[in-house]
Every structure is written in structure tokens, then in C-alpha cells.
Amino acid sequence: MNFENDLRVTLLAVGGVLILSYWLYQQVQRWRQPAARNLAEWLSEATGDLVPSAQIRLRAEIAEHYAESVQHYQESDCSEHDAQSRALADLGSPRVAARRFSRQYFTQKETLVFDRAAGRHQGVSVPLLHLVVCLGFSILILKFPKSSALPDVFWSILVYLVWLVTIGGIVVRRWYARSEPPKASWGTFAYILWAKTIGALTLHRFYARNESPRVMFRRDLLVSLAQSLNLLVMLGVLMAQVSSRGMMGYSALLPSFLLCLNNVFRGYVLSRKLQSAPDEDLSFPRPSAA
Amino acid sequence: MVGGMNFKGSLPALILQNLSGGSNHGYSIAQDIKKSSKGVLDFKEGTLYPALHGLEAKGLITSAVRLENGRERRYYKLTENGRKTLAKERQEWLAVSGAINLILKEAT
Image (cartoon, rainbow over all chains, first blue to last red; front, side, top):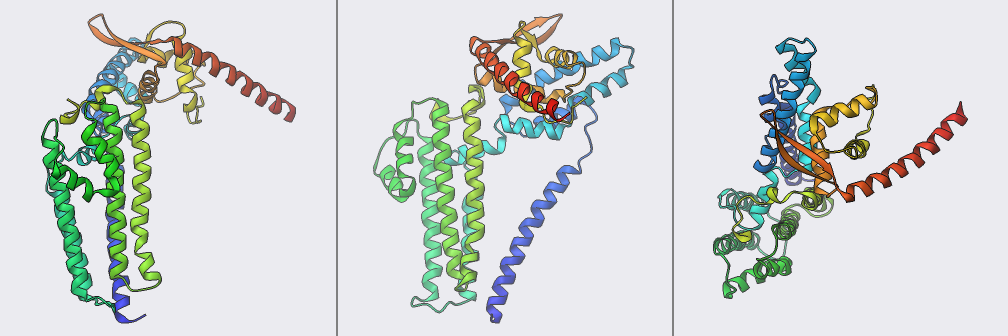
């Protein structure tokens, strides 16, 4: 292995270690939070990540449960402070409860998946993330020339073209998410052509708007999964391009593969929740479901 | 007390059994289960609600809010579907626990 290959391995390894360290740091910070001292803290920790409708219902029921429990302990000669402590202990760990609740109800983070799939998420973070990734690839390509029949600049331009097409797709999708109901047009057709791997699903999105929120959500989820798989495979291929040949090239596909697996698993969890979620959990603002 | 033991898979069946005697609210369901098992089955009460809401989503129970002594309480009630599920689960449980009993008795 030569110096350039060593440097590539080091860069990829450092990147991987940094991402892993950040994730571990977040987990440790989460577990280092002090235990809940009162009901408000307990509810905040246990239900804070859930969608508002689930939060409202759980908070009301658990607050009522707690009040009854405190009253019961006070009737058996406990001081108010003792009764509150025992009632809070009976509820159990808010972290464990949060885990159980997040299996049953949608979290706010999960609803972003649907918002992104439907193009309702209007932030600039996604286009910027794409730009950063493309910049990174471009630097890698130019910094480490690869012996190939095609010039390195070609690969660099290709990366930016992919970025432009991706951003174009995002903009078009957002544009159509605004209109209610969307009209089929050449723009729609072009978008469907661009997203040919998800074409069938997209077509459904545009022509079956009057279905129930549950059906729409299921389709949003599939679109989102297909898109992320699409993007991740593309990233993997690009990474393999800029890496050296042989095992190094293939190993560059591993992070993409793992991310794909993670997405498929998350998709499975979300689809299970869709089966049992009450209608009010699916009713946060959705222009398409109005 | 076997609170540490993993009996959470049985919690929905215990809830259905409790509601077979009539409608009830969360706190009372938790206390009834603990009392009926003479404190052997202990569980953290905060986790009762995902189980209740899961049963409701499956159509095995229904719920309605009632005002009692100035307090809003959500009462849960068994549906016909829930009654059938309970009968089936009870049968399965009796068959499995009977078989396990036989094996454990043989071992002693």
C-alpha cells in the first residue's frame, strides 16, 4: 500500500471514528441526565420526543394516575413528600417508559421522515448536506487522482451534476407539495422521470391524494425509504470511485450498506406503528391529507 | 415479587382479564393486577399505558373519559373482539402452563 492509499484509509478511519465518537457522546450524555425529581420532569423525559397528540393523551392519563397514587399513599399515613416520591417511583424509570412509548407512538423525529418524503420540510439543511458531501467527494477526486480512461475532472463534474439534479428534484418536490391538489403537468412528468426508481410510488402520490392519512403515510414512508436507499447506493458507488481499487473500494460501500440496513429497519418499525397508530397521531398538518 | 422477570408479554392478557369484570381506569387496573397476584406480579405503572393504548388500537378495548369527583378519568372497556381474544389467550395459557407444570413436577 502506498502513501496515498494510507492517507485515504486514515481519512476514512478518522471520519468513521469521529462519527462513532459523536454518537457515543450523545448516548452517554443522555444516560448521564439526573433522575426525574417530580412528575413534570418525569413526563418531560418520558414523552418529550413523541408527537404532540400522543404527548397530550399520555400526560393527561399519567398525571391523573400519579394524583390518584399520591392520594392513596397519603391516606395510608404517608407525608405529602413521601407520597409523591413513592408515586413517582411506582411509575418506574422515565427512560424505560420513553423507550416503550417510542415503540408505540410516533416520535417527532420520525414525522420528519414523512415531511421530507412529501416535500413539506422546507429547510436548507438537506441541500446543504448534499453540497458538503459533493464538495468532499470533489476534493477527494482531485487530491487523489485515479488511473482511469476518463480524466479526474470528469468525475468531479459528475459529482456536481448529481448534486444539481438532486437539488432540482428536491425543489420540484417541494413546489408540488405546496399546491393543493397538485396538477399533473410536464413538470410532474419530468420529476417522475428523474425519480425513476421511485416512479411508481410517486405516481401514486400524485394521483391518489384523496386516500386516508394512514394510506398516504404508508406511501410517504415507502417513498422516503426508496429515496434514501437510492441516495445511499449512489454515495457508495461514488465512494468506491474515489477509493483505490480492490478491497478498499469495496469496503467503502460498507457504510452505505449499513446505513441502508438501518433505514430498512427503521422503515419496518415505522410501518408497524402505522398499523396501530390512532388517527389523531397522523393528523399533524398535512396539506395532502386535508 | 417477580417484577424483574419478563412478564410484559402477558400484561395485555392481564389487562383484558381485568376488564372482563367491567370497565376500569388505568390506576385501578394496575392496583387490581398487583392485588390479584398478591404482589407477585409487580410492574412499573408508567408502562401500563402503552399496553392499554396498543389494545385499544387493535380494537380489543375502547375508552371514554368520565368526570368523577371533579377528576377526568379515562375508563377502558372490553369489546366483543377483546372478549374473544381473552378466551383464546386464556386457553393457550392454561395449555402451556399445564405442560410446564407437568415437566417441572416430573423433575422434582
